[in-house]
Length: 262
Image 1 (cartoon, rainbow, N blue to C red):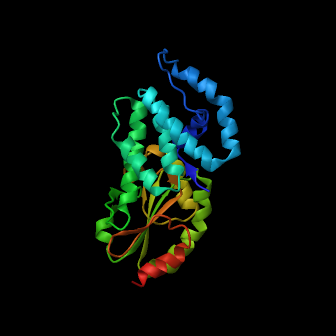
Image 2: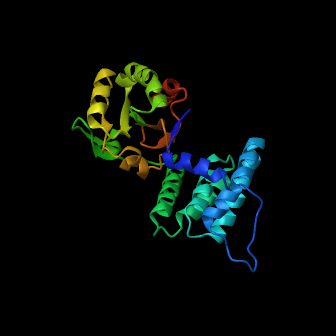
Image 3: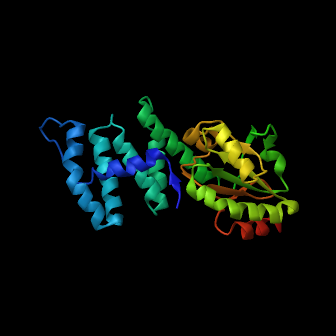
Protein backbone atom coordinates (compact mmCIF):
# COMPACT_ATOMS: atom_id res chain seq x y z
CA UNK A 1 0.00 0.00 0.00
CA UNK A 2 1.19 3.54 -0.73
CA UNK A 3 0.12 6.99 0.31
CA UNK A 4 -0.83 9.04 -2.76
CA UNK A 5 -0.90 12.77 -3.31
CA UNK A 6 -4.19 14.24 -2.13
CA UNK A 7 -4.59 15.75 -5.58
CA UNK A 8 -4.46 12.32 -7.22
CA UNK A 9 -6.82 10.76 -4.71
CA UNK A 10 -9.31 13.57 -5.19
CA UNK A 11 -8.94 13.30 -8.93
CA UNK A 12 -9.83 9.62 -9.01
CA UNK A 13 -12.89 10.09 -6.80
CA UNK A 14 -14.19 13.17 -8.58
CA UNK A 15 -13.34 11.89 -12.02
CA UNK A 16 -15.49 8.87 -11.38
CA UNK A 17 -18.59 11.02 -11.59
CA UNK A 18 -17.97 11.75 -15.26
CA UNK A 19 -18.20 8.22 -16.63
CA UNK A 20 -21.06 8.27 -19.10
CA UNK A 21 -21.71 7.72 -22.81
CA UNK A 22 -20.47 10.54 -25.04
CA UNK A 23 -22.71 13.50 -25.58
CA UNK A 24 -22.66 16.35 -28.07
CA UNK A 25 -24.13 19.81 -28.27
CA UNK A 26 -24.89 20.19 -31.94
CA UNK A 27 -26.87 23.40 -32.45
CA UNK A 28 -27.48 23.58 -28.71
CA UNK A 29 -26.04 25.80 -26.03
CA UNK A 30 -23.42 23.95 -24.04
CA UNK A 31 -24.67 23.30 -20.48
CA UNK A 32 -22.61 24.52 -17.51
CA UNK A 33 -19.77 22.21 -16.53
CA UNK A 34 -21.21 21.74 -13.02
CA UNK A 35 -24.53 20.65 -14.52
CA UNK A 36 -22.82 17.99 -16.63
CA UNK A 37 -20.98 16.77 -13.55
CA UNK A 38 -24.21 16.34 -11.61
CA UNK A 39 -25.93 14.40 -14.41
CA UNK A 40 -23.05 11.91 -14.67
CA UNK A 41 -23.04 10.94 -11.00
CA UNK A 42 -25.36 7.90 -10.98
CA UNK A 43 -24.04 6.42 -14.23
CA UNK A 44 -20.45 6.73 -13.11
CA UNK A 45 -20.96 4.85 -9.87
CA UNK A 46 -22.56 2.00 -11.77
CA UNK A 47 -19.73 1.87 -14.34
CA UNK A 48 -17.02 1.68 -11.70
CA UNK A 49 -18.73 -1.11 -9.81
CA UNK A 50 -19.09 -3.23 -12.92
CA UNK A 51 -15.52 -3.34 -14.20
CA UNK A 52 -12.41 -1.40 -13.22
CA UNK A 53 -10.57 -2.02 -16.51
CA UNK A 54 -13.49 -0.90 -18.64
CA UNK A 55 -14.03 1.94 -16.20
CA UNK A 56 -10.52 3.19 -16.93
CA UNK A 57 -11.25 3.16 -20.65
CA UNK A 58 -14.39 5.14 -20.00
CA UNK A 59 -12.48 7.55 -17.79
CA UNK A 60 -10.07 8.24 -20.63
CA UNK A 61 -12.85 8.61 -23.20
CA UNK A 62 -14.85 11.03 -21.07
CA UNK A 63 -11.72 12.92 -20.06
CA UNK A 64 -10.90 13.49 -23.71
CA UNK A 65 -14.49 14.47 -24.48
CA UNK A 66 -14.68 16.99 -21.66
CA UNK A 67 -11.24 18.39 -22.44
CA UNK A 68 -12.54 19.08 -25.93
CA UNK A 69 -15.81 20.67 -24.82
CA UNK A 70 -14.55 22.37 -21.64
CA UNK A 71 -10.86 23.10 -22.32
CA UNK A 72 -10.76 25.79 -19.65
CA UNK A 73 -11.74 23.37 -16.86
CA UNK A 74 -9.24 21.57 -14.64
CA UNK A 75 -11.02 18.25 -14.06
CA UNK A 76 -10.83 16.80 -17.61
CA UNK A 77 -7.03 16.99 -17.46
CA UNK A 78 -6.96 15.65 -13.92
CA UNK A 79 -9.02 12.70 -15.17
CA UNK A 80 -6.52 12.01 -17.93
CA UNK A 81 -3.70 12.33 -15.43
CA UNK A 82 -5.38 9.66 -13.31
CA UNK A 83 -5.60 7.37 -16.35
CA UNK A 84 -1.89 7.86 -17.06
CA UNK A 85 -1.00 6.77 -13.54
CA UNK A 86 -3.45 3.88 -13.24
CA UNK A 87 -3.20 2.19 -16.63
CA UNK A 88 -0.87 -0.75 -17.23
CA UNK A 89 -0.42 0.39 -20.84
CA UNK A 90 2.85 2.31 -20.58
CA UNK A 91 2.73 3.54 -24.16
CA UNK A 92 -0.67 5.09 -23.54
CA UNK A 93 0.48 6.47 -20.21
CA UNK A 94 3.48 8.24 -21.76
CA UNK A 95 1.35 9.64 -24.57
CA UNK A 96 -1.11 11.16 -22.10
CA UNK A 97 1.63 12.55 -19.86
CA UNK A 98 3.39 14.20 -22.79
CA UNK A 99 0.13 15.79 -23.84
CA UNK A 100 -0.56 17.11 -20.34
CA UNK A 101 2.98 18.46 -20.02
CA UNK A 102 2.37 20.81 -22.98
CA UNK A 103 -0.88 22.35 -21.71
CA UNK A 104 -1.23 26.08 -21.10
CA UNK A 105 -0.53 26.36 -17.37
CA UNK A 106 -1.86 29.87 -16.83
CA UNK A 107 -4.62 28.53 -14.59
CA UNK A 108 -3.14 27.45 -11.21
CA UNK A 109 -5.16 24.23 -11.07
CA UNK A 110 -4.17 23.17 -14.57
CA UNK A 111 -0.61 24.19 -13.72
CA UNK A 112 -0.56 21.54 -10.98
CA UNK A 113 -1.49 18.86 -13.50
CA UNK A 114 1.17 20.11 -15.90
CA UNK A 115 3.80 20.12 -13.15
CA UNK A 116 2.85 16.64 -12.02
CA UNK A 117 2.97 15.29 -15.59
CA UNK A 118 6.41 16.82 -16.17
CA UNK A 119 7.65 15.34 -12.92
CA UNK A 120 6.32 11.89 -13.77
CA UNK A 121 7.98 12.03 -17.19
CA UNK A 122 11.27 13.05 -15.62
CA UNK A 123 11.00 10.21 -13.10
CA UNK A 124 10.41 7.60 -15.79
CA UNK A 125 13.17 8.92 -17.98
CA UNK A 126 15.62 8.89 -15.06
CA UNK A 127 15.98 5.10 -14.79
CA UNK A 128 19.45 4.00 -15.86
CA UNK A 129 20.83 7.54 -15.75
CA UNK A 130 22.81 9.53 -13.14
CA UNK A 131 20.77 11.20 -10.41
CA UNK A 132 21.58 14.77 -9.44
CA UNK A 133 20.89 15.55 -5.78
CA UNK A 134 22.73 18.09 -3.64
CA UNK A 135 21.56 19.72 -0.40
CA UNK A 136 22.30 20.63 3.20
CA UNK A 137 20.76 18.02 5.47
CA UNK A 138 18.67 18.63 8.56
CA UNK A 139 21.72 17.94 10.76
CA UNK A 140 23.84 20.47 8.83
CA UNK A 141 25.85 17.92 6.85
CA UNK A 142 26.45 18.46 3.13
CA UNK A 143 25.03 15.84 0.77
CA UNK A 144 26.11 15.53 -2.85
CA UNK A 145 25.13 12.32 -4.63
CA UNK A 146 27.73 13.01 -7.32
CA UNK A 147 30.46 12.61 -4.70
CA UNK A 148 29.10 9.27 -3.46
CA UNK A 149 30.28 7.16 -6.38
CA UNK A 150 31.64 3.84 -5.22
CA UNK A 151 28.72 3.55 -2.78
CA UNK A 152 25.30 1.99 -3.25
CA UNK A 153 22.78 4.63 -2.17
CA UNK A 154 19.14 4.32 -1.17
CA UNK A 155 17.10 7.50 -1.70
CA UNK A 156 14.09 7.19 0.59
CA UNK A 157 11.16 9.56 -0.05
CA UNK A 158 9.06 9.27 3.11
CA UNK A 159 7.24 11.05 5.97
CA UNK A 160 6.60 10.41 9.66
CA UNK A 161 2.82 10.60 9.05
CA UNK A 162 2.96 7.92 6.33
CA UNK A 163 1.99 4.57 7.87
CA UNK A 164 3.52 2.41 5.11
CA UNK A 165 6.74 4.45 5.33
CA UNK A 166 7.04 3.87 9.07
CA UNK A 167 6.36 0.19 8.54
CA UNK A 168 9.41 -0.02 6.25
CA UNK A 169 11.81 1.45 8.82
CA UNK A 170 12.81 -1.86 10.50
CA UNK A 171 13.73 -3.36 7.12
CA UNK A 172 15.66 -0.25 6.09
CA UNK A 173 17.55 -0.10 9.41
CA UNK A 174 18.35 -3.82 9.26
CA UNK A 175 19.84 -3.42 5.79
CA UNK A 176 21.76 -0.30 6.81
CA UNK A 177 23.25 -1.94 9.89
CA UNK A 178 24.25 -5.05 7.94
CA UNK A 179 25.72 -3.35 4.87
CA UNK A 180 26.73 0.22 5.77
CA UNK A 181 30.31 -0.85 6.51
CA UNK A 182 30.47 -2.44 3.06
CA UNK A 183 29.48 0.74 1.23
CA UNK A 184 25.72 1.17 1.62
CA UNK A 185 24.39 4.68 2.31
CA UNK A 186 20.91 6.15 2.74
CA UNK A 187 19.57 9.62 1.91
CA UNK A 188 16.19 10.49 3.40
CA UNK A 189 13.88 12.96 1.67
CA UNK A 190 11.34 13.91 4.32
CA UNK A 191 7.94 15.10 3.16
CA UNK A 192 7.03 16.35 6.62
CA UNK A 193 6.03 19.90 7.49
CA UNK A 194 6.82 19.87 11.24
CA UNK A 195 10.57 19.97 11.89
CA UNK A 196 10.36 19.27 15.63
CA UNK A 197 8.19 16.22 15.07
CA UNK A 198 10.60 14.93 12.44
CA UNK A 199 13.67 15.47 14.65
CA UNK A 200 11.99 13.71 17.59
CA UNK A 201 11.01 10.81 15.33
CA UNK A 202 14.55 10.42 13.96
CA UNK A 203 15.99 10.39 17.48
CA UNK A 204 13.42 7.92 18.78
CA UNK A 205 13.95 5.49 15.90
CA UNK A 206 17.74 5.96 15.73
CA UNK A 207 17.93 6.84 12.04
CA UNK A 208 21.47 8.23 11.57
CA UNK A 209 21.47 8.94 7.84
CA UNK A 210 21.06 12.49 6.46
CA UNK A 211 17.59 13.90 5.88
CA UNK A 212 16.45 16.58 3.45
CA UNK A 213 13.70 18.77 4.92
CA UNK A 214 12.16 21.99 3.63
CA UNK A 215 8.86 21.87 5.54
CA UNK A 216 6.69 21.82 2.41
CA UNK A 217 5.00 18.45 2.91
CA UNK A 218 3.64 17.10 -0.37
CA UNK A 219 5.29 20.06 -2.12
CA UNK A 220 8.76 19.13 -0.87
CA UNK A 221 11.04 20.49 -3.59
CA UNK A 222 13.20 17.41 -4.21
CA UNK A 223 10.12 15.19 -4.30
CA UNK A 224 8.42 17.40 -6.88
CA UNK A 225 11.61 17.75 -8.90
CA UNK A 226 11.88 13.98 -9.21
CA UNK A 227 8.20 13.34 -9.92
CA UNK A 228 7.30 11.64 -6.64
CA UNK A 229 3.53 11.20 -6.38
CA UNK A 230 3.34 8.43 -3.78
CA UNK A 231 5.29 7.34 -0.73
CA UNK A 232 7.11 5.34 0.37
CA UNK A 233 9.23 5.69 -2.77
CA UNK A 234 12.64 4.08 -2.54
CA UNK A 235 15.21 4.57 -5.28
CA UNK A 236 18.47 2.65 -5.50
CA UNK A 237 21.57 4.22 -7.05
CA UNK A 238 24.50 1.99 -8.03
CA UNK A 239 28.21 2.59 -7.49
CA UNK A 240 28.44 4.44 -10.80
CA UNK A 241 25.81 6.92 -9.64
CA UNK A 242 23.06 5.60 -11.93
CA UNK A 243 19.46 5.04 -10.85
CA UNK A 244 18.89 1.29 -11.13
CA UNK A 245 15.65 0.69 -9.20
CA UNK A 246 12.60 2.85 -8.43
CA UNK A 247 10.93 0.24 -6.22
CA UNK A 248 13.79 -0.75 -3.95
CA UNK A 249 11.58 -1.45 -0.93
CA UNK A 250 10.93 -4.92 -2.35
CA UNK A 251 13.79 -7.29 -1.32
CA UNK A 252 15.90 -4.27 -0.35
CA UNK A 253 18.77 -6.14 1.35
CA UNK A 254 19.20 -8.58 -1.53
CA UNK A 255 19.22 -5.76 -4.06
CA UNK A 256 21.83 -3.80 -2.11
CA UNK A 257 24.05 -6.91 -1.83
CA UNK A 258 23.73 -7.42 -5.57
CA UNK A 259 24.86 -3.91 -6.48
CA UNK A 260 27.61 -3.86 -3.84
CA UNK A 261 29.04 -6.99 -5.47
CA UNK A 262 29.20 -5.39 -8.92
